[in-house]
Image 1 (cartoon, rainbow, N blue to C red):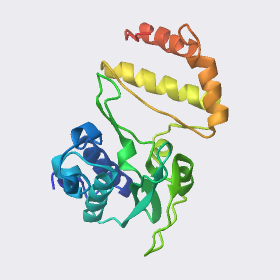
Image 2 (image 1 turned 90 degrees about the vertical axis):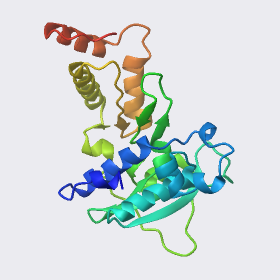
Image 3 (image 1 turned 30 degrees about the vertical axis):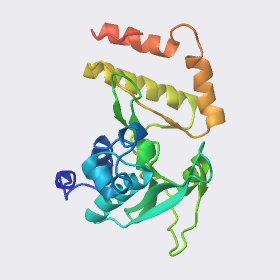
Image 4 (image 1 turned 180 degrees about the horizontal axis):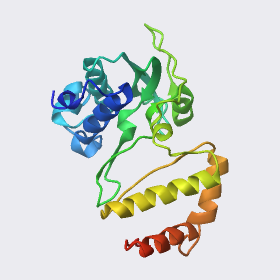
Length: 239
């Protein structure tokens, strides 16, 4: 109830689901070190993810399924196996219906524990409101359910990267996104911030950006340009 009480009826479907997704993930940890030897029924349950704060992918899926259902959204469970895992090891996530269309959410893989010492409880959006095609590309298998037909998810309208303007279809778009996010982070004055971009093509735009700016042994000209602009306005960007 502490999560659902923060949801406002005036919000859009997207904002409601995003809020539940973020608060839910912030309160749970998928690291096996945190549930090894604990009651297996808890870590594979909604109680484990919502109340105890420690869960397997099944616990994550059940917890998000419960919260989204309580919030009034049509939600179903999906089963497959994760990329990089033994194909025999099952993985579970959910689908939710928002604004009349279905989307996948994998809360386990959106939980980014311990990425840095500064920000150890990051929430990711790589698997938030994504299509079936994206899930097939990032998960070894997506199984057909035996007792019901899983609805198709083909829309990208409410994908986090599309909604927030971080979906790059060209190198110039990606560069503008880096500038925008970096300048906003500097203006906020925090010690650490993280942002991510989704590329229309991995082999195209992503590789172009990496080659031009990230493979250099010296400061990227893109960040240097931002740095000089910030100095004019009295802000500092550490390079």
